[in-house]
Length: 221
Image 1 (tube, rainbow, N blue to C red):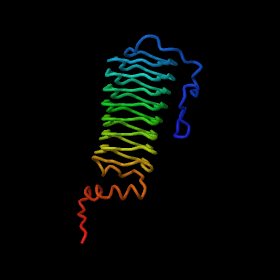
Image 2 (image 1 turned 90 degrees about the vertical axis):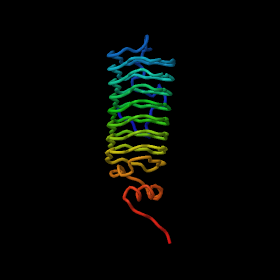
Image 3 (image 1 turned 90 degrees about the horizontal axis):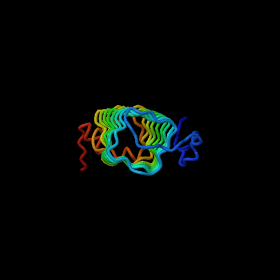
Image 4 (image 1 turned 180 degrees about the horizontal axis):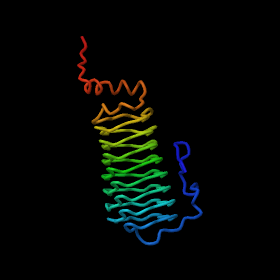
């Protein structure tokens, strides 16, 4: 199962495994295995689902307040209007997963591994992706405010229609990252854009930062 910006499954009924889903019974527990479950509505307060495994499952209109999901694995999982607030998602593993109209605020996601993941119309506020590895990840029409990609590896990542506001890229490694179609607000690590593709308008917008990073003094007259 592979997602792209043009094939995002926006409705539960679109999922290939929807006929196998069963309601999630009870809460979430650490080191547990969840397969073809559906959590619809409700709030998980300070849940500990560390090292849990989720396969071909769905979460809709759910809020995670705090809690720990460190080293959890999400394979083929669909999230719709899900909120993570102050949740520990560090060292999690995400594969063939889709997050639609989600929100992440004050989340620790350092060291996470993401491959073939789509974020569609999501909001990120003060999310720590430091040292994470993102491969074939799409941020479609998203807002990334004060997001930290310091030391992270981004390969084949795209940001169509997204807004980057105060994003940090210090010591990040970019490979075939396509930033065209995004509004670029880079707070740190402008030199890390080596390996990224931008358009002419973006280049002009970034020119002052690039000049400063290269030690170029620009004077008129």
